[in-house]
Length: 300
Image (cartoon, rainbow, N blue to C red; front, side, top):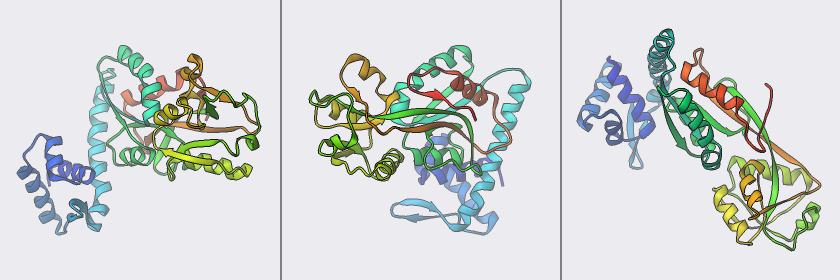
């Protein structure tokens, strides 16, 4: 069993495609296929099978994957430990975040971090919370910014930093007062997030708690798309206030203050591991010390 065979298998588990795996490794599909068949022969089990046009791990493959991922992690840790021993902050930090956080918050820290640590390469992936947590779990990301919902499982992840932000009703409609009760908004059109998303589950729990039934006319997975609809006067929405700072400042939308407050937390997560690479630790410490409008640090 060779390291390259293990690497091919772990990447296949993420991509579900021999072609995509070969591209990621800069190998031919034939070479990757040979690596996988060699592993299967040595272990005496089928590791993957075709299902709905994609390659999926068998039960045996799923059972083995964490051990092979651990081998890769230890290799990366050894490389990083050597770099740390040389007193260098170098390597790669792979960061994941949602679309809004990636566009509004990340540029500031990425710019500052790159200036301070020019030897560190930064990779950013944007996606929804469940996708990012899974990428972090399998090791294709090092750090993830996301809403702390559902609650973080301490068996899988370590919280490196935490912030809190209020959510507020935002509108561009001149007929709505800046201060009003939730009851006043009962007949107002609402533009909300898609059902099943972490954001919408937080908002639904809040509405249920206060006994409010919104008049939903539209749903979207994108906070930016929701803001665009609000700016067009199509309805009101409930968004993180950190996501509306610039829009409120330029007057394109305004926050309606209600009688019921809602806040939620953002967290910076890393996968549970006894070793944190120096570059990832430096990035997390810088993120923790950043000053972002409407996003307030929470002591752990």
